Length: 264
Image 1 (tube, rainbow, N blue to C red):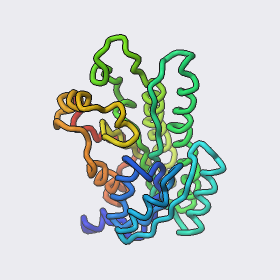
Image 2: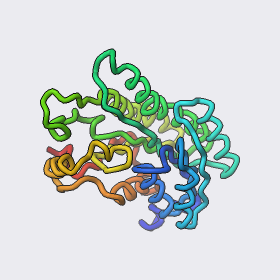
Image 3: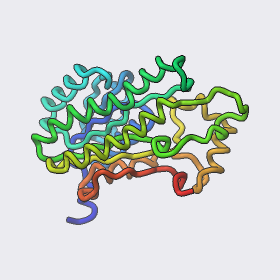
């Protein structure tokens, strides 16, 4: 197969959670540019995002979905199956974060973040995975984080020693995503389903812009070997690679897209 054909996603259908903004939108756009039709899922703004992505000439099905709701997830997969007949790629991207204490006072935030970041990944992988098992093929791409691999350096974000800046639910949930990826990869390989995980470093999005001021981004850039945070196209190629036949012998892998952050 010619290398261009290996990366071609024409005729493929990709379901992207958290696809209406940020990293999810960037990956969805990359998949559409490579030829995939999209099932674009998020809690809000799906229609507007779908209208923007339609300029790539692909069919876009926007669906408002809560990844923590088993009923929502199952209903979405059933609708996608009815509309397209198959799902070839799942980008399990929906996720949230918030600063909270690692104490009983932080329990509410902990439970909310864990519900989206790991239970949501489990539910979506399970529902789409059942369809992929019947198809005998599929690629699942989970979105982790470098903070699922490493502890955060708080000095990059706050200067005051006693400032409250902890996000234990986020780091714990992303670590769980990393190992769930490995578990699904080894168990579902017999169904010809590949499962991999992308672990981004800092990408500025509407979700995290409030904690990424100019001074913070400057410190992060200095800490990053490539000298900058992630950009608006830096996840596209990785997503297309893992979704396509170019990675057909790749599964169970954790790929840091971090400008060299984890190489220190």
